[in-house]
Every structure is written in structure tokens, then in C-alpha cells.
Image 1 (spheres, rainbow over the protein chains, first blue to last red):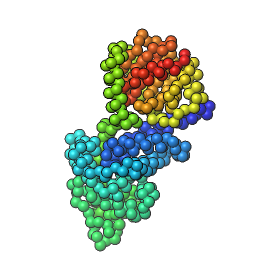
Image 2: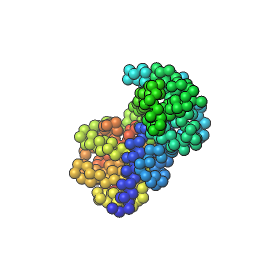
Image 3: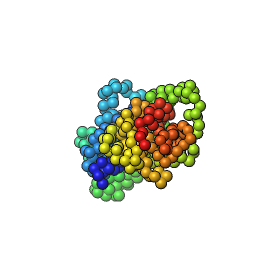
Image 4: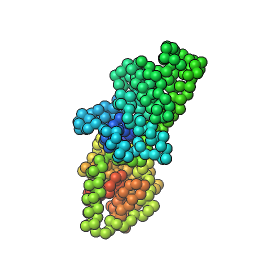
Length: 174
Length: 221
């Protein structure tokens, strides 16, 4: 195989990987931004940046956390560049965003609404963990926190969601 | 489980924070403490629903890399051009060929996301396999020699101001006139060219007619 076709093969594999992970990137972006349009822009920027930096990804198995990291940065950048207003959750609900779409499962919609209402500091580590499959150590590294702080935030995030799930909140850990 | 019990407090923290990856001592504690065991079970059930909740449906999301307003403007301008420009574009393409083209493109959906222009050598290597030349004035960001109907054809993606367009050089597919089609969510045009035809497909909006013609004029058979 000549270098050009090897490059094409590697490029194609990278593109396939991007396509495969795109749904989760969109979902992660949505839960960060709580706005579909912003999420779409963030994912677009993320994919462009990932493509440009593709040689930096040495281990394909690490693609997911690598892309999530890029996405977090792009999400922060898009706010810096565009000075976007803070998303109002009531407005999100009024607009009938896809997160609130239901297949007749009202309890699921309630849970999504409760996630949207979580403060960023609780929502982000929770999404990284449950959707991104990150360990608490990886989340700590991503967010620049101690692992103990991540544990506390995750505990509080779930504790707030227990009510939306029909369970009583438990006593706080501190 | 009591707040005063440090084992319970520690277990509660871990169960609430990371119920799928508990330290061994917390697992052992939950197995022997009824309250913490119940909390673990509830939290694991909650987590199953949480995952479901986070996996929002994506059907409402944009699938393209082109910004929506631009796509709308493009669609509007092309519609106007079609209304003014004459009827032959409304002819329908041979369904089988159009369907196969669109299906082929959807199988290489990643090609739409390429942004880096390829070198002339890389593009030339692909074109050479089909014995054609393409002096593209637009950046070629994807080039693959693909099997199609028993032949090897160049499958290219060019970047335009309106977003990416797929160009397929169909040396062995002669057609009687220009056709448009819409298949698998893609719109496209087939234009007679050289001994065969050229297909130009867009994922979003319509294919700009003048651009398609320009692309055809840049192919040398």
C-alpha cells in the first residue's frame, strides 16, 4: 500500500470512528449547552478540530474521552466567541426541545427535565460518567477537581434526581 | 443506615456517586447493611433510567455540517432557479441508478465530514484507476476508487460555499439527458458527460445547477 492510500485508509477509519461517536457527542453537547442549535455547532467544531488533530490520537480505544475533551473545550470557546446568553430552562421546556420528547413515557420526560435543571457543576460530571463512561478519576482530571470533589458532586446530582424518580432524597454526605 | 455510622456515610457517598464501581469494602458493607443495600438497589435502578434519559432522541438534530440558515437560503435560491430555468431538470432519474448512487453515498457517510483538501497526487491516484482526469477548481476533500455496478469509479467530495457535494464520475453510465433525483434523504443530479455521466449529490438542500455544470466541465475523459 502506498503512503497516499494508507493515509486515505487511516483517514477513512478515523472518519468512521467520528461518525460512530457523533450521536453521543451530540447528546453530550446538548446536555452541556441545553440548546440544540448550540449543541449542533459545538459538535461541528469538535469534529473539525478532531480531524485536524487526528494524528494526536495514538490509541483508538481512547477516542471517546479524547473527543469529549475536545467537545468540552469547544463548548467553552463557543460561549467566549459568541457571548451567548445563559439558557433558561423554562424556555427550553416551552420550546419543546428534543430532550423533552416523549414516547408516552412521562416519567422519562420528568427525569430529563430534572437533569436540565441540575446546576452545571452537578450535571456535567454526571453526563460524563453515565453517558461518556468516564471514571471518577477521569472526570476529576477533565474538570480539574479532586476525586473527592467529583464523588460529592456526583452524589448530589443523583440525590437531586431521586425525587424526580419518585424516591426520597437521602441525607447529604457532609 | 445512620448518619452517625461512618461506614454508612462512606457507603452512601460511593453508592450515590458511582454505583457501578464500588470499592470492595462498600460492596461488603451494602451486603450486610439493609438500608445501604436498599439504597444501592434503588440507585442502580435510577441509573438505568438516567442512561435512558440522557440518550435523547436525535431525530430533531441537524445531520449536516452546513449551517441551517445557509441551507434554507440555498434551497430557496435553487427553487427559484428551477422555476425560472426550465423544465428538463424536473425529469426523474432512472430510479435504480439514482437509488444505487444514493445508497452508495450513505454507506460512506463519513466522507461528508472531510475538511482537509487532498493533494493532487492523492486525487490523481484515484482518478487514474478509472482513467479520467478532474481539474477541479473546488478543493477535493475525499477521493476513493469505489466499486459500482461492476466498475471502479471515482467517488469524490468537493467543498463548496454551500457545503460538501459528492461527485461520482460514471464513465460507464450513459444517460439521455440531465435528471434530478431524491433518494435516501439525498438530492442529486445526473448530467450526461463524456461517454457516461456525472452524478452530483448534496445531503442538504438541492444541488446548485451551475455548480454541477461547472464540475462536469472540469472532468476530462
